[in-house]
Amino acid sequence: MSTAAAGPGRVGWALTDSWTMTRRELAHWARQPVQVVVGLVFPVMLLLMFNYLVGGGQGVDGDNTEFLVPGMLALTMAFGLEGTMLAVTQDLNKGVVDRFRSMPMVSGAVLVGRSVADMLQSVAALAVMTGVGYALGWRWHNGVAAALAALGLLLLLRFAMLWIGIQLGMVAGRPEMVQAVQILVWPVGFLSNVFASPESMPGWLGAAVEWNPMSATATAVRGLFGNPGGASGSWAAEHAELLAVLWPVALIAVFFPLAVRRFARLSR
Image 1 (cartoon, rainbow, N blue to C red):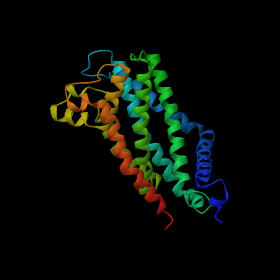
Image 2 (tube, helix red, strand yellow):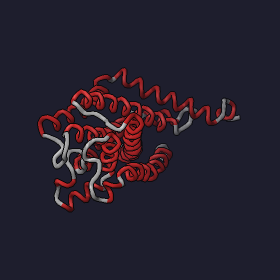
Image 3 (tube, one colour):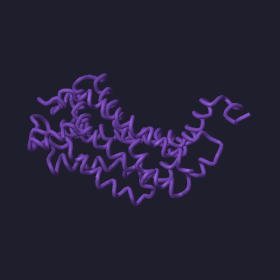
Image 4 (cartoon, rainbow, N blue to C red):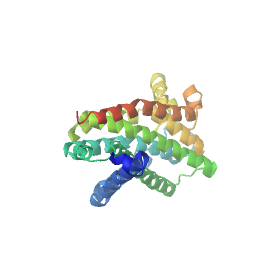
């Protein structure tokens, strides 16, 4: 009789193994507190820099801070891709994944543990960023339900970025290759309406910016929070909430099966 059949059932073993992998990832937080703190502080530094030094919200009528904070929340979720990639490549190079795959456990538990831990870290990052934003004067104006919906869209974007990071981490295979991906992530992040309204850009560039998945989430959460810059005359801006759901779902539909298939082939 197989181990899975002899125990509480396949679902029970999968949940137990996934929780074990999640606890392993969370234990890293205690052993590597500097890395965790840097991950939380870095987006705060970007927020402070663009709010006070650079001057965000170009082309926006209203308070710059209220425009900038929702955009920075979306940017923080997207930049989480780099941390996921780095963690995956480190585990691959240390042989950790191979050791887990040789053990009598549900193979997908490794990916589940990685994803749950990253989402918990993203919740912590959102809590820190919203707290700092509130201290800077940012407020939401449309009630608790709309604010929770905005946070849900942000976490949906992070979940999509998570599976992109897992897939790219397994493709890269080495931590050094994460730097190559950073070269691509940063321009995509800044080619959005996080820091400035598309109306302040040349026409062709503004159109490209509005169709950026990060722009869709940033515009949608601004609208839900009741902050300036939530909509313009374009179709993409007027339907930002729809796009903020469709873009992440489409990315998950592509990269989730790719990551699962790639993981299954690692030991072949």
